[in-house]
Every structure is written in structure tokens, then in C-alpha cells.
Image 1 (cartoon, one colour):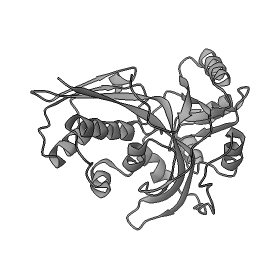
Image 2 (image 1 turned 30 degrees about the vertical axis):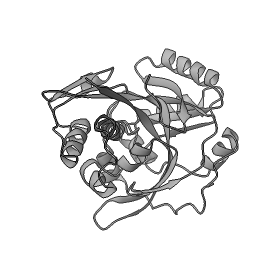
Image 3 (image 1 turned 180 degrees about the vertical axis):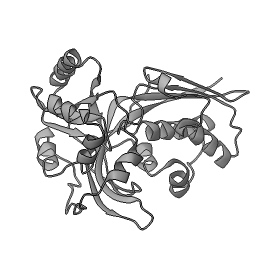
Image 4 (image 1 turned 90 degrees about the vertical axis):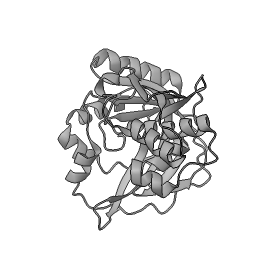
Length: 293
């Protein structure tokens, strides 16, 4: 029986500005989103009965009997495509849960893409319907490419390719639900950026120069809820070759950017030795969806 496997990459907010708030309470954002070659995996095949298994390091943090983004996405696209939702889905959960790197949304997006490929669907449901059911992070997670994201996450602008850049992701072992961070956010809104290079950047140093004029507006709020974020950022910034250390999304995962894979791997090894309880992974930022071998 045919099976399709899709990589669900970590989504990294290289910067995140809160620029307003809608009357319905949703915050308006501006963020440069990139993806890493670190992530989860979704495998989907047709089955006589619905079967959902979760494996991986963080598989224990999810209950396959409970509704989550993967099962919701599978039933949603089956209903939209008039297909039976008797699927066998396996989620290999390598990313920490509720950690600011879009794991749930990326898993849901990978599920949609896997079902589309499995059933050879010419297109996915409308963006509006996808957002209504699965959330505003879905459009960018379906792209899996560097993107400028605005609005509530639904306004996407394609940017040029990122130069080769390596990354270290660090989570202090504490989940941090997005809703709790936005609920506590009371800072002044940022002004929208005047310009983002449409053609990309010539090298990593140009990217860093651009990012240094930006920030993550949610960092202070997240640090108040999870003080360990401050320790993570300090530890990352202290690593030789670290060009920028910043929190991703609403936290608690942070990232450090490096020129080369050697520097990133050394930094990951140093951090692992000094903080064995943290989740630490070295990888690279990608410009195209990662193929599953």
C-alpha cells in the first residue's frame, strides 16, 4: 500500500514585531520566517481503519487518542476531498511541544501535503478554510520557504533566498503556550519595517546586519513566564562564532546563528555538556522543502 512521508521543519522567527491588534483581539504581526533542517516527520498511508501513532523523543508528550493538529488536519482534508478518513498516520515527534518553533502547525501542514500527494489532489482547500480550521501559521508552514509574514500570519511576501547559514536551537525543557504569552503582552506596538530586501542578502553578515535592527517583541513577556529563556540566550550568545542569539516565536525555544556547520556543532556540543537537561540541536536554515530519504 502506498505511503507518503513529509518532513515538518522547525519554523524560526528570525524577528517578530507586534505592530497592532485587531478588534477581535488577534495581534497583528510582522515576522521574517525561516525553516531549518531540524524537524518532525509525518507518514501517511491508506488503511481500513483510522490509525494514529506517535513516536520520537517528544512523542510521550502527545496522546494519539486526543485531538491534535495532525488528526484535525487529516480529517479536514479528507472531508474537503470527499475521501474516507481511514488513514494510517505516524508522527515522529522530534521537536518539543509548545516551544515557539511551529511544531504543531508544521505537522498539520505536512499532513495536508502528504494527503494531497497520497490522493493526487490538484490543490488544497482554500487558504481561508485552512486558517479557519488549523490556524494562521498554516500558510507559511505549507510554503516551507523563507517568507515575510504579516497580519495575523496570513499575509505572506516572498523574499529572496537566504545565504548559507547554520543554526543552533535550544529549549530549556519548558513548554510555553502561545496564548499565555500574547495574553500577557502589554508593550507598545512596533512600527512596521519600511523595507525588507526583496532580492535577499549577499551573505550571512548582511542578514545579521539587517536582523540587528529588529527584535522579538515577545521576549520580555516570555522571560517573565519562563525565566530560563534569559539563561539560554546568554549561553547561546557566549558561544564562539555566535552571530545572533534570539528567541523564536513566543518561546521558549531560542536560536543562535553561525557562519558554518563546524561552529554550530561545537556550540551545540558545549551547550549540551554544560546544560544536559536542555534540548539542543545544530542544523542549517533551508531555502526549499527538505526531502525525506
